[in-house]
Length: 61
Image (cartoon, rainbow, N blue to C red; front, side):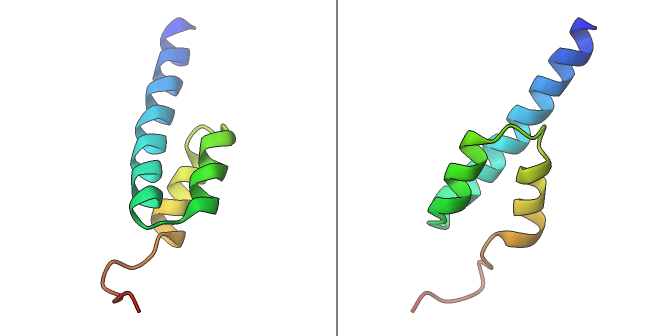
């Protein structure tokens, strides 16, 4: 049981760290705050990384 909890915590920390880093670098404040507040075992973070982060190839205007 302890190993399952540890695995869940590590899984969440990895995804949350990557997603928060990307949201912060892309100036997406709403996403950053949402991911910081809500604990979803990485689901919200994975969705952000795969579908909602800004495209790096777009030029800032």
